[in-house]
Each structure stands twice: as structure tokens, then as C-alpha cells.
Image 1: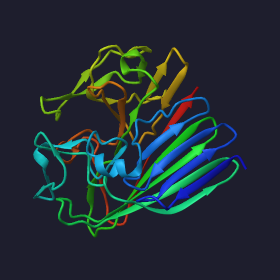
Image 2: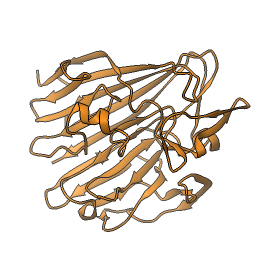
Image 3: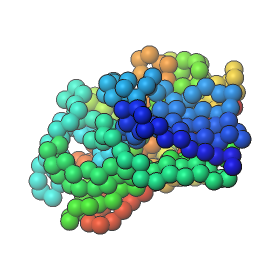
Length: 311
């Protein structure tokens, strides 16, 4: 059997390794935040800008939120406040420059609820039951994330949200991975399947306007471009984003399903990696409602994306 799985229970939390021995592809997943810490193919580097060790993730997750799951809201909530069903709530979690950012599950330890391997893939499912009433989101829900390592150096990721409350609840979903292809972002070729961008104000909160965007329609050198922006993925069969190191031939292809119609791109100051985030809604969606999912009691919704390495 080409595929295999190993779960290390001896760390501060479970660490899962998915492997494809035939192609030399592997993925490392931490139960902490259910985050993806490594993804590499034969003869390639780890394309994930991850953590050195499990304890490093626990100590430094809020320093960049590398690979963080964004749930139940994505990116930020303006001033940490939103109104739902005529009641105002204030998020009581992590703030940056006065805005609540990156959801409520980024530092939670998920439970491994299922795993397996066969001739076609290896997978693991991790789940977290959210029941916290003190963080400004007093709604019960379960977040289940399934990583599946497949042939042709592909990793698919499915997130399922189940509403365990007795009323409808607002939800969004997203990811915050940083990718590296072995050189500075400036030296990479970048291509996005988008012609439209969400307009932000000076606090990176959407104004409600959509503006045209013309860069990176074809592969071009990233150069000194700075991005901290949200884009609308064009509704066609092309990948949402392709990142290429032309010197080595290493390429990352990001191909989300229709459940992730937005792409947030951020270039950190160190420019050693680039955050490319699949989002189901735009930032501050709890207020502006753009892409917001209202999930009825007892219902579930799923979000899917995949990452492929060409080396």
C-alpha cells in the first residue's frame, strides 16, 4: 500500500503524518488548531512556513497566525463588535490595532476522530466542539477538518461546520497558511484567477465596494508588490492561484471549491513567505454580511480546497 499514516501521541498534542511512499509526498498536521505544519513532495522543500516544533506553535501562534483555522469568523471584525438578531456582541479574544482578528479556534486542541489509508489516499479527521459562552460568540457548533493526501502530490482539505445551537447562527470559514518555495516572495512568479478586489478602508475593513484589479492575470514576477487584500475568485475551472519558483521549477497550485469564493493575500515584511488564504466570506462579514453563511439549527455546511505541488 502506497499511502500510510502515523499519529504521534507523545508530543504536547497529537501530531499526524500522512505519507505517500510511492511519490515521496508527506503532510504534517498538528492537533493544536488542526493546523497544517508541513507539506512537501519528493525532492522539494516544505512549502509551508510552519513551526519548529509543537511547543513553538503553542507559544507563537498569534505571531503571524501561521496556518491558523479562521472560524467562526475570518480575518477581522471591526472594533470586535457585531449585531446579530438585534443583539450586540463583543468578541473577547485576540485583538490587533483595535480589531478582533482570526476567529476563535486558532489555539484550540482538536481531537482526532477518524483516520485511515488505502491505495489511493491517507486521511485524518480532527474535530472541536465549541461551547464557549464568554468570547462574544455564544453559539454551540462543531468544526471538523479532514486532510486527505492523494496521488499527484495533492492535499485536499475539507472543513465541516455543524450548528449545535437551537437557533440559526452566523458562520464564516477560512485558512491562514504561509507558503514558501525556497526564495524571497519577490523572486517568485505569481498568478491569480481574479479581476476584482474588495475595497478596504485604512483599517483593512471592507467599504462595501468592489474594484477592478488587473495585476497577475498572467504569471509575472511578484517583485516588491505589497498585498494585504481580498480578491474575488473568477467563476471558472482555472486554479485560484499559482505560485512558481522558475529557477527550480517548484510550483504550488491552489484550487478551492465554490465554497471559497474569496482569496486573501498578504505579504509579511520579512517576505520569506506569502499568506494565501481561502475564505468563504470577506473580512468583517458578521457586520457587512458579504458571503456570510446563516446556518440553521442542526444543519451542516462544508468548505473545500486543495493544494498541489509540481516539482
